[in-house]
Length: 248
Ligand SMILES: [Zn+2]
Image (cartoon, rainbow, N blue to C red):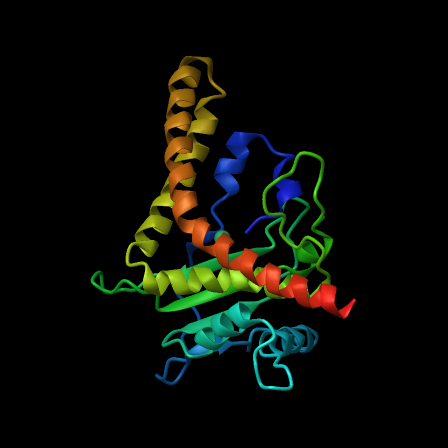
């Protein structure tokens, strides 16, 4: 997921090339000793990051006095993630630079058997500093969903996590998901190549046409990949927001 304000700063071609925040990983994460871990794995978090993670977990699994979940969509997703047959690694990396503005990133390890459609491992990167400083405010003329609007701290982390966990679930429920994500990555690579060609007068026109075709296909792919994650994220945001308004 991206923060809405930061994307506005970039021109559309750059936006296309950096939008792919779902990508393949090199092979890592398999446990030594033969047994593969499953469910949510937090072993890559530092002691300080584990404290943040515990507050996220507490929130996700919070119940009222009658034992009902306070945030049903979040709890259901979190509980699913804990039971997956493949590992979901959680990491909280620092932002690499000022342009590193992705609040969350979803990485998947592709299955080695071609017939297998679900990933062998997933890694979710939560950049808490980016999430903290995301504007989360509606600006004049902004009518769509604004991530993190009216939320603070752990509520924001939960919203970002819900978005990325939805991608993890898509990778299991949508048999074409890995293929689509692959295609999106290769289109992004291709767009970088065309951007370089645009710098030369002789290839500028054909590169511009190529970029336009890529932009059109990327738009469709992005909608297919991001649409379900946005729907769940928005529902989790509503649940968090409703509770927060009630507590205030
Ligand atoms: Zn996403």
